[in-house]
Image (cartoon, helix red, strand yellow):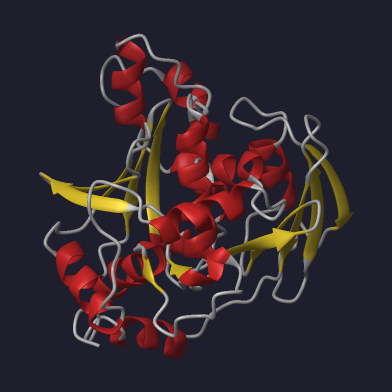
Length: 309
């Protein structure tokens, strides 16, 4: 062990590292600079939380299967931004671009359709590259989600591939009318629980289990959110990481059914988390479905046409 290695700090950052995937070295540097590295900071601006919630929900819908939940190797949460490091695989970058980029829906719904049905991706999302990162933001808001961990040149190629079949992309420094209408409809919907989604994205590594493929999925539910892992962590770990642990959100947990500690395939688990602030519930289930070698090869094959299809 290196001379001067702070084992006390290592223990103190264990839960945050488990939630975010950050390295101890990075957190130790922040600690020396005076930052609190024992907790996971919340967004300081509601607009930032809303963007994070929208990103989490959209990416969940595409069903990424990789060694990292949603293709995320780590996140670095700060009050005014969130940095996300993705798995450096072309198909992961392509799927993120496909899920997030704002465009007019190609099939042009009728005039009486829900405003949200006129836009695919995240209304108002814009991007630009800076150095080794892709910056995602919304016009006229204090928002920033930084994507990294892969060659930056991949993102414009992924965006071009997406827009070949979504030619009416929304770009520019202002919101388009359809995006504004979609955003307004989203704000009035109960099926977009920002207070649940943003904290989960900032702790997404907490949902990863021990298997070679970790699939995290979430979708809206009346009164809260459904959260599902195909090979998630032991229930006691998740309860601590999302509940009253040092990095938790303070959610109250009720274990309905638990197959731990055996954790064998098919020993499903079910836990209800309740936010004591507004009563919303995260209905969590862990299906423990292991993936085969053929599944892993199929994932690798997706890289070949990631920027051309």
